[in-house]
Length: 119
Length: 130
Image (cartoon, rainbow over all chains, first blue to last red; front, top):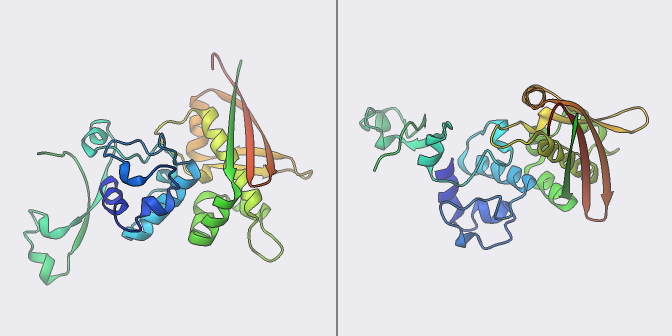
């Protein structure tokens, strides 16, 4: 989710820019910026999460609509903290799919949980 | 017995915008059925001022619960009104469990609206040292 948000946030108009009501320019945000320390309110966070659901056609858990659960932090640190990170993937890059079902059965997207980030 | 206080302020305009942009999905994911019923206007729409006060109450409760990254669904914290219109807090599910874990024994709320903002103050009695 962090990756999705980050990728889209820099688009134009960008979910973050449009819904988070950030007082500062979103483009000055770095990977480890704490959105809430930057001025995103609890209520704006709800809007942000709902907008992310729309943008990526996913449904987040209700508890993720709350401030503090979702933070813009590097994935490795979140995994190290024991949090479950669910991501949507382009199936082309999944090794066990080997791109076979990608074309024949339309498996263009897959959802998975991250266990480790390497490299 | 210790006491904790939580306060929050919510822009009514922000709630109006959320209703406009996300409509039923925003209302259904954030507010309890009771809250939506209490804030429903004669034409079937919802009063953003009253909803903003309820959102402020939810956030104020999170502050007295000292929630960090546990993740509590917004609907697990609800505001009810008695026959005289006095508000009270109802915790369910994860919020109720966390309150028990944190030693919260009693909780009360006061709501207010003025101009572009709605506010809530929550006071909680806590076992031991808060």
